Image (cartoon, rainbow, N blue to C red; front, side, top):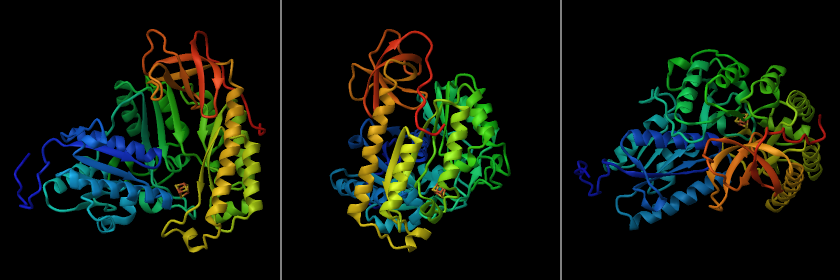
Length: 476
Ligand code: SF4
């Protein structure tokens, strides 16, 4: 530990600090947490084995719904209250809530030591070290100042990795805070992304998920990286070209991308998904509502029929493709009958999984100006109804897979049962199986499915070629 130049009496942690990052929200945040951890390690700090052992705990916040912010505030409050028993511990925030609130987060969350916005991830070690040096609460949520370390790769390799290819969003969905907190769209160039994927493959990564808030807009935005990165200026190639380039990287067995938009499900993309062997038969395509009036109110830019056509195109090109989605219930003015339209539409499509959210107004969005008129109990009912429907659907889809052999990318020992191993199918289903000699994380095995639950498949490792998973849903 160093001396205390600020003379504030805190033990200074400008030497090696053990850190722990608690992540809320989406895959983008998971990727940012990985990047933040790699960045801190490069600055000489070390990950703690558990939160209780950490000198610094960082909460990576999500702003997508009020509940997500409430969770982050609750966690921060607990951590800050716990600081009295942990002299010298620092508590910080990063992510969308930190970006949305700016420096005001230090006032809104008394006791918070530092905060870094989504646009300023590269500044994290410096902001942390400033707080650790006892120079008072520190934040960096600026929109456009060049970041230090901005051109380095930030990753912590595992079997799977997230790779940001498109940041920000140019759409203007009425309820969404992302354009405020992540800024205008900008795409990394194909060569820049491929360079990162090659490095990941060399470090043992077998599966990459290419991320963007509206990932099918990749390459379209004539924007400049907010950190001024010269490799990200101007137009780049569209998503199918990027998929081809990543597919050619040796060692990468699987490619996923998220999140999609129906307008991006063009024939060229469907063709790329069909023809490129590493591209998995899975797409996350948020629907949000099956009612045209609500979709128009949400400014989603498509109708239910547009969505149906997009799914038809994909399923014609990629038989067996799994489609997962997001749904919002209780959007302002949504009637019970309009909710039933969504329910019927979900059945028609036959989603493989769905993330269902109760609407909550986000400050500064157009939807927040409308009355949040669905009572909480009614939102809960609609939410639970869709969850029950989806559970039944999952179970039926999974039961149809019993007896088949599916390719699984091995992740390792099951976190719930150390005598079993776990992996994922190409359609992103969790499969649990008995270990066999020579099994290693990152290997591909065929698993014969013996039992199906709504969220998990169970099987045994088998020889032979994997067969495609079943076609389901009534849209073909
Ligand atoms: S597409 Fe809409 S919901 Fe998705 S990030 Fe962009 S503005 Fe938000």
